[in-house]
Structure formats: C-alpha cells, structure tokens
Image 1: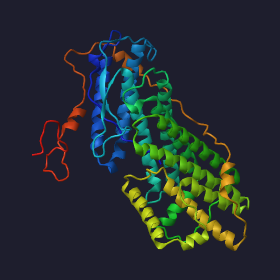
Image 2: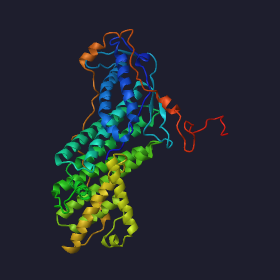
Image 3: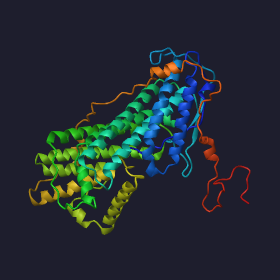
Image 4: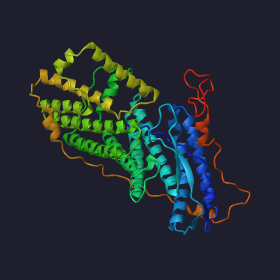
Length: 474
C-alpha cells in the first residue's frame, strides 16, 4: 500500500527577476509561466475532497512534465552545461527566493504545515522533482485501490491495475534515487527536511521497497481469495484451494525479504533526520513488518507444498509475530473471549469502510490485510493437521533465524533529466515581447492561506484560533 503523500503548495515567483540569458532570452519567461500553471493546479488540488483528488493527478503530472524541462534548462545554463545539444548561457542576477510548504515535517495538529523559505535554484528543482515522485506514488495508490474495493475486478483488470502501479512505483523510486545521489554532493543541508539528504535517501529506499512488494502482489492469489471470501456479492461458499509452484513461493519469499531490507534502511535513515511526521515513520515500520510477514507466509507455503504441514504452521505463527500479532493456537482460539472477537471484527469492518470511502485506507502498509491472509491459512492448515495427518509443530524462532537472503527485482529504472525539444529551444532564442508578462498564477499566495480566519471550537464564526502577543482575552 503506497504511503498517502500530501502534495506541497508553493509561492509565486518570477524567474525574470533572478535570471537572464543572452542565448535564450525568453527562457526565464517560459519557465515562469509553466511554474505558474503548476502552482495554481497544486493549490486547486489541495481544496478538492480527498475522495476526488486521484482523478486530478494526471493534470498535475502533465503540468510537472511541462515545467521540469525548463527548470533543467535553467540549471544547465547556470552550470555551463549544454541543453538539448545547444549552449545555454544563464546569468544569475540575484539569489532565487521561493517558499514551499513542508508536508513531511512535524506540524501542530489542526494547523497547516509550516512554509519554508528557500534560496537557490537547486531547492526549487528538488522540491519540484519530489512532487513529481509523490504524484507517481499517489497514482500507484489509486490503481491499487481498484483491486481492494468492494467490487472485485476481473483478472484482466486486476493485472492491468497492478502493472500500472508497478510502473508508477519504479518511476517514483528512480526520481528519489536521483535526488538522493545528487544530494550526496551537498556540503550543507537545506532548511526544509523534505529535501534533506537523509529523507531523500529514506524515500528512495521506501519506494524501492514498495515497488519490490508490488511485483509479488501481481502473482499472489491469496489476498484475492480473502477479498472474495468477505465480498457480500460473492455467492460461492466454497472455493478451490489455490496452488503456487514451489520455486515461485521461494522466489516470492526472497523478494519480500528484499523489501523488508530496504524498508529497514529507510527506517534507519529517517531515524537520523529530525522533526519527521510520525505517520511516515510508522508506515515504514509497518511496511517492514508486512514484508517480513509475507516472506514467512511464502516460506510456509513452500514447506506445506513439500508435505511439511507442521513446519508450514510454524512459519505462519512466525509471520504473526513479525506482523506484531499474538500467535494463537487452536485451544487459545477457542478460549478467546467474545470481546476480543468483537474487537477484531470491528477492526475488519472499519478497514473495509475506509476502502469503500477511499480515505485513510492502507496507512498500515497492508499489515492488517496480510494478517487476514495468514489467519485464513493458519486455520485451514491447523484443521488439516489435526484431522488428516498429525505432525509436530516446531518452534518458529529457529526458522526465523534461518531465513534466506533477499533478492532485488532486476528491472529497476534510472531517472534521466528531461530536455526541451528543439522547437522550444529555437522559440526561446527570440527576445520576449516587451508587453508580454509571464504568468505567475492566479491563486492566492501561501502566506494568505495562513492569515485567513478559522473557527475555533466554542468561538464565534470568524474568531481567530489563537491570540497574538499584546492581546487580551477580555
């Protein structure tokens, strides 16, 4: 389950105030206009209800793809590097000043995240590319929502949605990896924690872990069986047990272990950063647990297919421990109080409602959903072991200590900075029209949003939520 990133908003700027070009005089104007369009779209997206935001991601992605080539052209001109086979001369008039709203840092509950003032074209480039990676992750999240919804898709639709989610995941991973490698050359860290080297490295590992895990979901039939089992429209009371070849099950386990390793690296990098949103830290830990639990499940499937049902049950109990759930045997399950069963049923219905609404679902990185799959298999195998062939169930701790090494997915992408087309380069050689002003955006500035009056609990409409220095309550 992808992390539900919040897209940042930004202030309006004019590149013509900070840059000039003798070879392509219109470059700052075109870059300002493209950024103004992106700025307005980000602010409008922020005001859309969360359930409708996914349908507007393609528009923001198009605006980002239009703006980013101009940004790299300015960066190439300042650095003295050719762009699209042409020499671009860009002179810095004054330091670029811009504000971006931090979405990964800590904030006071009930208030907007802080706006961070940044200087340099590098910060603008990093925040813009990070936003592009967030959009790719959110698109993958929207695709995965279609396969977990109440209306189960056809096998072809499910395969198509997972393939699209895989592409978006690897695109986001490539962008974060590019930014992390570029940030390694910095001597000082920026003011915004969102683009610090430790957070960028953590996001690179996180998106790679998510991309690796989605490759397993493509050929994993068990979550779909659980979905069909609790689907109200499903009239099939009995289903044929799914089968996974032994080699595939072991391969899936190694892919899941690779995902857990990347998530553990991301968790360590976030630990070195300061003032990070707790929801992101918890999500990374849940993703690591989910991947480890999946690996145990596949190793258990591998053992059960070889006729070692007792060892398979031990692997499933180890999966419960890795997921953070208390393993329960058959006797413990019978003795469990009705209140505990009611609590579990309530949690399942609560998660189902989140999926139906499309808000707040999957923030546990699929840990709860994986727990359902493990419970289903555990009940089935324990019943088989008690009635058909009784085998001793070994302890799970030695099995967990003997887990194999992880294996990365081979087809990883590399981000290539986009370049402007030849026609655009030719068009920018002409000086801008004196009466033509660059479009900086029509939406209110970020500072205006913080100054709008908001209603405090128990206060009159329009009253401020806090009282400034020098004011009196009476």
